[in-house]
Picture 1 (cartoon, rainbow over the protein chains, first blue to last red):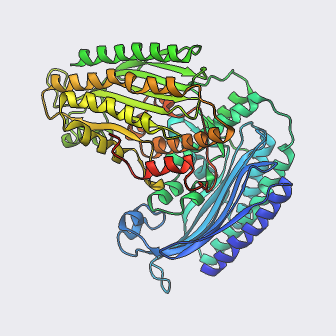
Picture 2: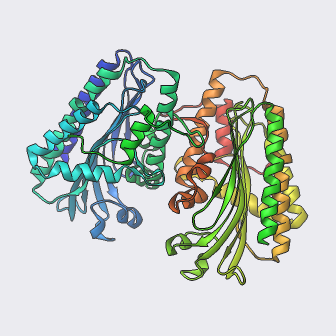
Picture 3: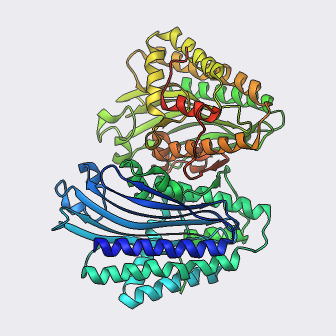
Length: 302
Length: 302
């Protein structure tokens, strides 16, 4: 399973970076290989200040080593293991894409496979991940398309998956202090190990491979739309909220910061630029208010 | 003591907002009074997009009520009280000033008085606070001036204060995952209650009133300096680090977010604009690298 997952994330990285470069037209991904002192490493691919993308990161990593008991306790899936089984293996792909055009949505996905305990006989293994869409302006067709593709992938494996993981996503990406979600959702799951490993791998593979058709057409559709300075300002304010979620609530980010992961790879998720104004007021019925309403009350998009 | 502190923070707010408006020349503070459901309230004064200041907030609050046991446990000074004495009173002034010019430093201060238990016979009371300077470009004279004023204020009350609170500041404002401090420090203390209340109040009063002469001359000196786009970009990157510290580590911010304080007042500390680039490299000996070195290894400025 370790090598299956390593092949998958490498393929997904190659395919997605090629697609995004094609959409961008001029920006090229910078590839940085890195290795981890305790074991393993990864490759971060970052495209910054392209024609279409303000910042896009497509990172893969495959790391292993020994956890501190504290890190072990805060690790999803392994919670029931307590302080034993401190050996771990984690392999995943993590992607965040922020386009320039305020009409083109930001998107994120991450899929990962984890093990605890010795490689020969892991005490636990599990899959986690998900994908979510974060528009600054709400195009309902875009949200529907993104959800539809993810529902199709889920349904192929279990019709119970999409409703369960859609709700999990709405619950997870909540900026609690704002009472609003980061975006219009998608799917999210963690600690998945309730069926044979090969079945779950096939599901995660289809999710990771499906992201491209859930998102890239939306950027192609929106990347050249006209926009004003006011639209850009609103996008920057939404980018600020994105940073708030990632820095205050995102478990993966906080786990990475606390366990001294590779900081530049972890924080590539932050937007290139962000803005915080005091007490922003939205005109009722304005596009900005309509989006905010969708972030406050999650909808069934399908 | 409650009313002494309320008068102090109100006076400091009036004096500092007048000084900052005078330095800005055109921007005016917007004043927002607010009240808290559980008891008390405050006044937030925000100047946004002025001639000199990108964003400045001078907030006072005086709130009281009943804590949840969880909030009580995470409250500085009251830790020894455990789950009893859930009544609380907190009065303070909190200030963050972000100028436009990258040569002019950002500054923050906060002074507060807290009580736990019934108003007639508090189970505990304490003072907390401090002031720190966050330049994007290091002018050693500025750091020295800021520290010198704070040392003078401290020395008036106890020569042991400045070295102790200077070190506390360097330790507190650490962005752990970056291995660097938010700025060049100042003073910081919490849980101060080891001498008569009136003595500590006099110290806190002198600190709060002394901030103006520690900082305003620095802005006046730097606000009209020439700067390039590259300087502005570096300032924006430093603003990103400022947001990282406040959202990931600052105890006051996290306490406020978790206890559903007034979000707009709490997050006024965030800069108007911020930037995150992937893997920024600094030329050895460049002004950007010299600053970063000062953030990595705190110095004795005096």
